[in-house]
Amino acid sequence: MQKVQVKILGISEVKSSQDIYWLLLEEVLGERRVPILIGKMEAQSISASSQQVETPVPLTHQLFSKITSNFNIKLKDVLIVSKEEGLFLAQQTWQHGSHVFLIESRASDGIALAMACNTPIFMHTAIFDKLDEIRSEQTETEHETLGKLSEETLNKLLARSIEEENYEQASQIRDELERRKNTTQI
Image 1 (cartoon, rainbow, N blue to C red):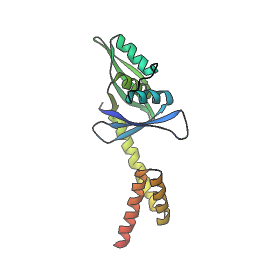
Image 2 (image 1 turned 90 degrees about the vertical axis):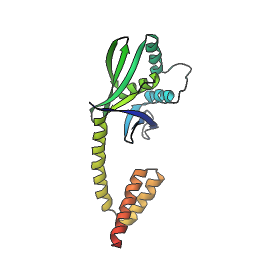
Image 3 (image 1 turned 45 degrees about the horizontal axis):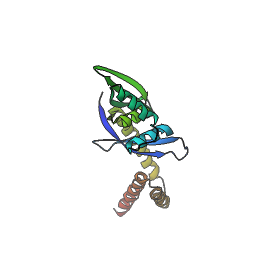
Image 4 (image 1 turned 180 degrees about the vertical axis):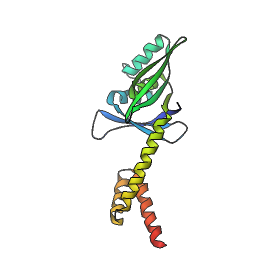
């Protein structure tokens, strides 16, 4: 099983819900990214730990980190794995003396604990491979769809994409407009 170290790129609220957030993970030595849906409490804990915010009373993950530290139990690493499409789990490797043991949890809890314990986070490379495959299929479908739209519609979509800061979609529309321009010049 191959794994790659990841870092937290950002957390943002899902616009349709106040209790669900997007956590964006990125390869430490690469550019691939993976979004994971997480709950509000985990988002707060991850955010507080990543910004090194001291709360008056420790958040749950911070409290757990303090307890394990007091008993000389160390979180060695957290590995994010995919159980099924869209469901991410964390395999936590803990060490107490010479005894090493694994605990499985939701990915969001594993990441929050890793942040509270200042522990590296890894992701199974198969997750990146699967997302690359899905993105490739989506890109092919988007190119087919964009090819069927009028130039006027494409320009409107381009303006809206830029306004909404959806630069990936904007670049695809720009590429389609450029392709058409180059085709008509030949």
